[in-house]
Image (cartoon, rainbow, N blue to C red; front, side, top):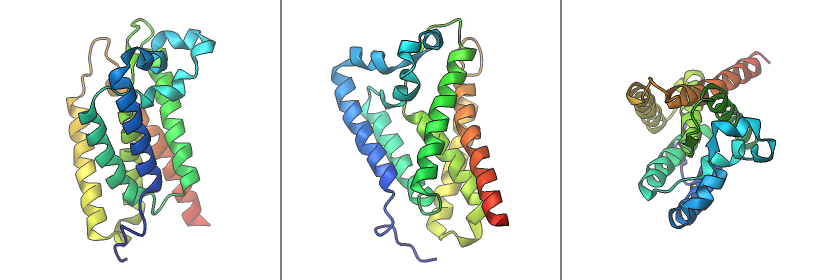
Length: 195
């Protein structure tokens, strides 16, 4: 397989990075608005605020976080978007966002801490990338193998360094964000291989 990076730009990932750049610029100057979109555990009992289950990943206040996540989106997206349809990728990202938000709100009911980060989408990208690597490794270009191995190691290190005790349920939320879309994609790819 020839490397055709410029012909196969990760359009969804570039679009997400652009949206997150705009939101980072806006929320870095207007933090109060960010908290109107951020998710807290109390939202589960407030139907008028359920929009936050979709809006919390676009809230970010720091350019450094945007830059690191955007690099990840574009590199992982380059591999992912060559093998997964746009429709399926959008569905997997949406499932990851909503299910992780629900999980966080239900499990973290005692604390009313806010959660916001488009890193949750990065975690679902990592899970999707690993599943795709399992199915398509033999057809990967060497650069795709490097990207997959790098983010596999990165995800393991990230999971190890996330806090896992006290009232902080971020570890389990991000674990849920990675595993849930991965399982769905695994069954989808397994079923499509059989047909």
